[in-house]
Length: 149
Image (cartoon, rainbow, N blue to C red; front, side):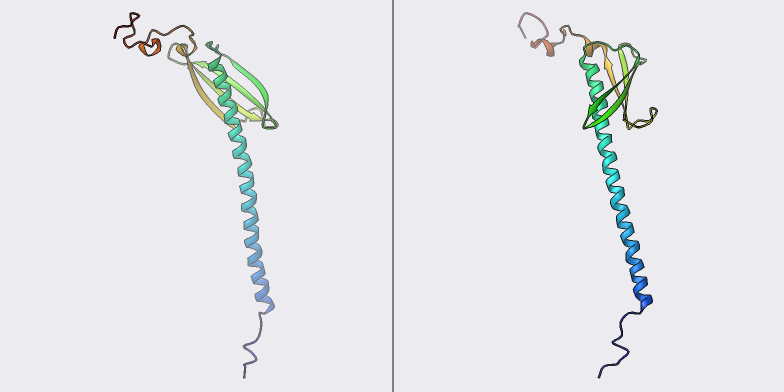
């Protein structure tokens, strides 16, 4: 015969404690999911901002002209959003070499904040358009014009 005390179920207190533990665990899981989705959004926006900053530096390099020491700003539509950028060109201690600092922010962000700040350099030789006297650019082994090695 079975013992009547052995077939009893959980008490009300035990059930409430178990539900409280499960509820706390579920809250932690929900918070983690929310934080992860926020992080994904921030990382996506930072990646876009880095591409925009890199594009701005590349445009200056490809212009073929040495940029003046100045600060310029602009905006553009990228990935379905409006982005604002500020490029500051400064002289370095090396003659013929300038530094370009680009900051990018989203529409709605404070003007003094930025998602990304990227630095690049441009030199006078990168902007010159004349032929180079170096042997690797003339197509000749010794750099001379007679075709003899």
